[in-house]
Length: 181
Length: 370
Image (tube, rainbow over all chains, first blue to last red):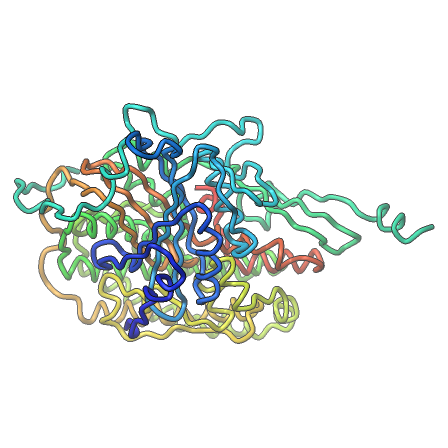
């Protein structure tokens, strides 16, 4: 049985993070934190001090926002942390600047080492301060090949792949049919 | 001769793998050695990297189902389970109760099969040849049972969005009950042959101690974490499917050495059998597949789903864009995080102890490389 949840929302808000509670049943995590590049290490340190373990570090490629922020490269890095003692998952998301550099957290969470190298392989994000920023899963001969970068025509803006405030009901009004085998 | 010169002369590099029998697949570990002591073990990954995440992004979500079984081929059904549950959460599909029961029964059978194979393979690493023959014998029964309903022996693609591919019959239930009875009788063999074997204990006790803080920093999960005394199991901590309806325990170890990890897995076999028994007793009637739209639309936004695979927490993280193809699919596999602690854990130990640690981690390389 799930134990009584302690809410960590306030702990992150007190540290000055842009944290918002989310609907767990819908999304599978409890807290959504939007980070600035210089907040990444503080975020990891806060999570470590509160006793979270690292789940993963991953990337996401969206269309760069042309309107107001030209510094943005279109790449996002997603962090997920969770707890051993109760059900609580947090997601942190940071926009990678045009230099493609963001600070590494591999000295706080050593497990982030491989996840960051993998993100460099797939997206080309360079983690500043990482001790060994070499290809991990992909070949060392071609370090500039990043398979998860999307083609221009397949890119969508961040808004198009984020939760909409009034998400329309899907799957109810549609014609129901058996899945074809 | 200066001491530093002496050290220089006695240091060398040793490639363990990618064809080494105790790496269980194509894992290479570059070892910096001094005599028989390991100074710095560095795993080299990617020999069978297939970019499953890209495949997940380039076809409608139904088309990715067969891929899920090809990451962890030893315990594939929880991988099926995580993926269908993720899409069901995203699309708001209700699953009939009978289907969830069948999912739990088959997933737990698969977990037992995985632990039995691990038990044999670990002892094989340590130089004992006999246990793997017993382990394979028992595992073979499970594979036969699962083959009768899923159609495959290892790379299952049995679950469907909204249910399972086909219903189980009386033959399946009888065979499963007979297997549970048989395996319980075999415990005594395993106990006499392995658990109380002094040679085995000497090779596993006090070797490779994982502290709780280290587990947290590396994100370790599964039996490798529970060996360190932390009772974290996704089935209890983040209940999914119908697991809350069953009575089972989470075995934990004390100090986190190889022997504790061994004991946790052996005790987990019995807990899985208990879950299967309860599920068979209370198996509800009804349909095994809900009607789902042919074109499943994944609403914009991200979504996470975690399940307990045999090796630990498996998380699927999906970003939808309103079409039926995921915009992004991240697969967080347990062995990846579990292995990443090796350079810190195995610094300064004897080479035979490294083999013992690697065996006790229950690694599946296709899962790490994805």
